[in-house]
Amino acid sequence: MVKEQLYILGAGGHAKVVADAAQASGQWREIILLDRCSAPYAVGPWQVLPEPQDPSTLAGRGVQFICGMGDNRLRLKLQTRWEALGLAFATVIHPAGVVSPLADLGPGSFVAAGGVVNIDTTIGRCVVINTGATVDHDCQLADGCQIAPGAHLGGGVRVGEATMVGIGAVIKLGCHVGRDVTIGVGAAVVTAVPDGVIVKGVPGRW
Image (tube, rainbow, N blue to C red):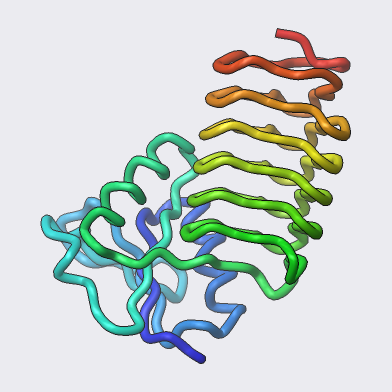
């Protein structure tokens, strides 16, 4: 069933990608971006409105929200705050993304074009599976993490809250990665990674 409105929080590059995917999906009659601006403006075909002081004024039947910023902690913090006001967060999947019907995606999560989420994988709230990223079977991704374009996770991988898996990085089958980790561009994770570190290189070191 087509819903009424999707509000995207943010109006930068990632927000445009989310808006484009949402429009391609045909799931919403209207897509509106929200920004901390003083007056309305346009980004491509979408209207950008000032973020209201009281977000609950936007609530209504068929109205949903999603965060469109790349910063993991900011995105998760904002979604958590708006959810506390009773606002409903959507899951947006580009039609060219592939998500197993036996995978579970939490509210506020996004799968871009070419993204793949395989069977028995659990994706938390506010997670980004970016362009061409793949998440194989039996993975667990905690709230607020992001799998950047062209990154690949083997089966049974666990990724902690707000962790960033960089462009083209790979994580070996069964590896566990902590929270607030940054895995650098093209890094290869072949062993468990503790919380809060930056991983670089092949094999990945911190």
